[in-house]
Image 1 (cartoon, chains in turn cyan, green):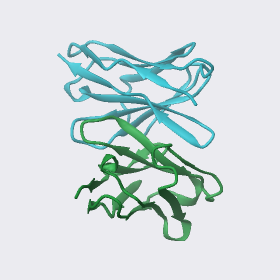
Image 2 (spheres, one colour):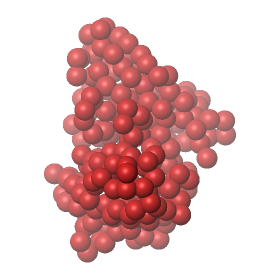
Image 3 (cartoon, rainbow over the protein chains, first blue to last red):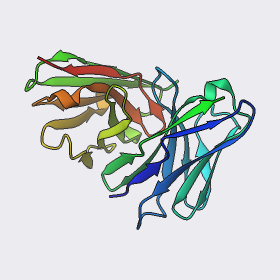
Image 4 (cartoon, rainbow over the protein chains, first blue to last red):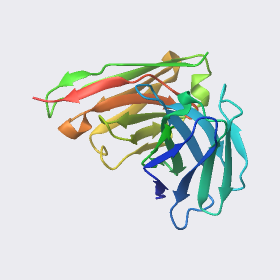
Length: 111
Length: 112
C-alpha cells in the first residue's frame, strides 16, 4: 500500500508563488495522485488529478493559478500569485486496488 | 450542479451503531465510485471506505474493517455507511465524496 509524505507546513507572501510537495513511497513512484484544498472551517475541495508524467486535470472552477507537476516520486502543487484565500490545508491522495490513502496535509500560511 | 448531502450523524454511546446516508444529485450516480472520508477534530483526512459503481468492489480502512459496512442504492442515488461497535476514536466529521466532489460532512460523536 502506498504512503504519501507531505511537509506539515509552508508559508509564502501574498502575490508570490509556492510549490507544495507530496512524495510517494518506494515502489509507488508511478502512481496518480489527487490534490485537495481545505480552507479553514470548510469541507475539502478537489483541485486536480496529477499523473507521474506531469499531466494534470483540474476540477471545475479551479483557478489558473493552480498547477501541477511531477518528478520521479514527487508530485507538486504550485500556486502562483498567492491570494489570502489560498491559506488552507492541502492534502494529496492516492489509491491502490480498493484502498485510498491521504497524505498528512500541508498547512499553507499566506504572509 | 453536483450535490452530496450527508445525514445521520449525532451523539452515540460507545459500542452502539449509527447509519450515515449521503444523497447525491447533479450527476449520473451509478457511473461513479463513491467514498466515505472522515476527519477527527483537528486532524487530517482519513479515507474510511469506498464502493464501485455497481457495488462489485468494496474497500475499507484497517481501522474500520469488520465494524463498518458501505453500501449504495443506485435507484435512490444514495450512499450509506453502517457503523457498528463504535469507539471514541471514530469521533469525526464524516464526508461523502465522489472522486472530484465532496459533501459538507456529518458529525459523529462517540461518547458516554
